[in-house]
Image 1 (spheres, rainbow, N blue to C red):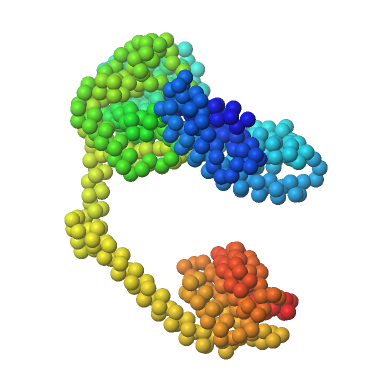
Image 2 (cartoon, rainbow, N blue to C red):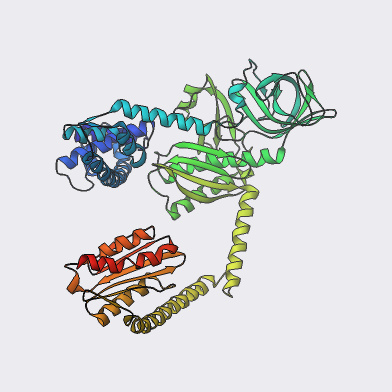
Length: 594
């Protein structure tokens, strides 16, 4: 089983698939986890599966060179998934053991299987393997019912607002002229108000306009739809967004003045500034995609994007966080292509010819007989794309990454800005740097030295504060010891010392144990809006009374948790109003335990 699975995993990962919760990625994840489970049953310890890749490459690398080229990548992906699965397995097994212990009968309920899958990422087939080992079966029908209910909830959560794209049914193919123009003349073919076809829209009414020809780009491929306006004499329709259904372009907006009727002739005007900024970001996305494949590897595939006038957002397949030096390399590569100022080339061709030229296509995307190939920097970036782009890479001017992070298993996200927005971002960063320098009475050149000095001084002051708190606690200990009660020959002290942190209370409990002798101590404090608790039991009493047991009771009383050793325990909670009641538990705890 393990040998078969390493072959499947190796080829899938070499083909660009990464573990995820959908599609081929989910198939890969299930194969990896099943192999890990079998390996563990055979006695394999820790992460072992990725180590078999070398044997796979040695056996099949000569016939399949892609395995040799991507060996280290395959190993990293498998190791990361193994480590993640180990955490999932540990957590899921605890929950499953609990549920199986409470099980009446031989069928694991569908609700339990779904909870493990939905909350803890525990695959149903793995739950089934474990169940079969114990002569149990799964309620698969119940699991499917839970899955169906979840799908209904998901659809309900996403179905809000007016979805004109699904409501509008029109057999019209709008001619798009926006690649070369932002203005033009057009005829109103259809009008819609609240999803219903109408003959006219009056001033102040929102609706959708369909034209026979338009320069407005309809939202597609991650690029937002154009905005602008339509006008004819005293009639003006402000376009806030443009989408597409079938071959028809839907201009969403409101009549700003006059009345717009079907058949009217109008002039079209795209918002130039928004369009210009958006197309720079779209071209920047293509350059980033190519740079990612250079820096991170050929496994990088686009998983989603959003391009508007303010920024670009690009989601892509990768198995770990991008290192700072890799981010810098990405910026350097993209900006180098921008400085080359090469022409952005477009070509209409068939899909097979495009692929032969090396054009990247989105996996799972459906393409027609004719496709648009967009090239930048010669062969640097060649992709299928129907979006609006810069004329030359130099138009982008500047590219700056502003964030990078994970959005799902095996999927990372980069956000970046270009052009004027990139310059504005850098200027804002410069202003923050100057402000920080002013706060520490320094300048840009000595800011790090000044900050280091401030942090060192802060560290020394914190140390001095701890020493002062220790002295204060010692003095408080002298005062507190006299307040201890005698309960069955045991000194019991339970009191609150608001403002003290856990460290100070621990030190004070140690001191009080030495002063009181045979004693049980419970101290509480409200510190930074949270309850802090420390319990102590002298060692001569730990056979009968345990600090951890007292702490569990006290912490629960303030809405929290706690525990520890028999002689010392810590805890806390959120209900400051219940602190006195929690402290009052110390006396009955001793009375019942002695």
